[in-house]
Length: 234
Image 1 (tube, rainbow, N blue to C red):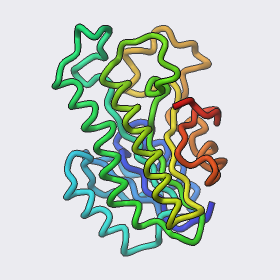
Image 2 (image 1 turned 90 degrees about the vertical axis):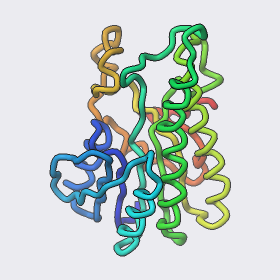
Image 3 (image 1 turned 90 degrees about the horizontal axis):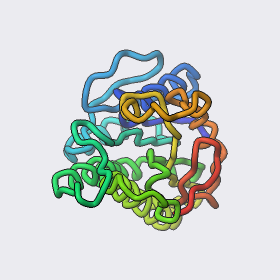
């Protein structure tokens, strides 16, 4: 991947922090770590403020980053699963509040981040815009039901990424837009749901994600890919 700079949105979370640390320690590009809440200092990472529920903060972050090298990598490493509202086990538990919260953070936030950050990407070289998705956002893979708000918000995110890929290809032919399914990662988001996970399927926060990103080509743009590089059905 051509260097320049990298943007990690959500560095106060487990996956975002791990990705930023890996990139910062490599020392071969400028790394911007963005989050709503303060993040602990990291080697080679410059922290900035960005709130996915505040579009003004997105515009401000983009303006600051535009003063430096163009980003060849942008990762939106954010999401909400429980945070006071556990995933619905049945349609009988559906509420407008839960649905709107998950859509606001899991779909609307990354979409608006793309609106402000994609214009910073170079047009004449490979660049990647990725967002954390989830296997449960796959319509074709849904065989269990439940988790309505989370599933639907991630499915919406996947459609947003697909649409972005179609439009971006017209002006950035070497660009890749992709969703990433990190598997069950040992973070606060998955903590309540780890009981039945086999030890070899509970991954460290940045398990292989950068390797998956490095392996993506423009032909993959618009897809969603798991931690092992396999494409997940829409």
